[in-house]
Length: 246
Image (cartoon, rainbow, N blue to C red; front, side):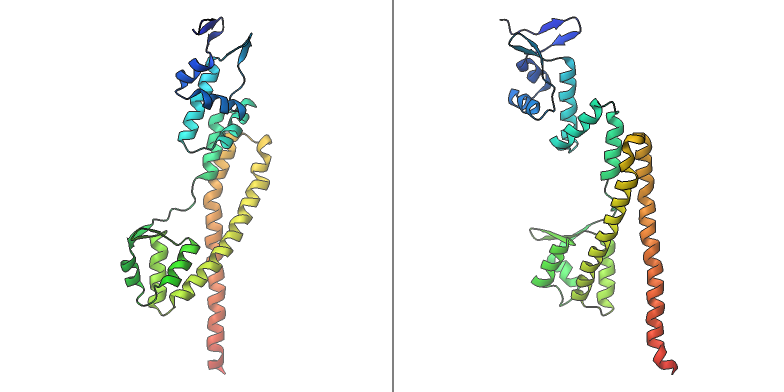
């Protein structure tokens, strides 16, 4: 039989080799996509499988999503949502609203000697290892990157005021655990009461809601921490001044 494309009344159709060439992917990749149910089966004409323009469009969409950093499993879920009648642009909008990083901290990179100079006599193998474990720093060759310039400045201020670096790192671990607990609580609230109503809510509205929740969550934590600091500072002053008043 001829290997030329077959023209049907509803548009051009491709054999698997032709589709692979048009999409710019190997045939084995097309077969893999079919195995993973990313690509629907072809129309059968005898022993020949014929693919449509819709198959080609889907392959181009998959390539675009891969370039944007999506996994194949994530793409499969997006395509499933699309097939259920949801607008894939709206689905991607929700995904972007959920996964856009919350942190806006600016990292700072320096040499290990420059880092050690900020904390005279306190930077050694043990403290460096603790900072690595906490994710505070990353080391690439002879360069060290601290995840947040603001946090680095705050740590320098504490150490210069007399707080040992080891104590700051210990407090950092406790703070991380507390923040993880708060973040888990907010994620559970959003997952249960917002995303959990996905079938009842328009995706565009959900995207807007998630975007509005970001600053609200951050303000709640910042305001709560400020109030807690007020309470703790007053309590500490009372403990310190109490004996002097008697």
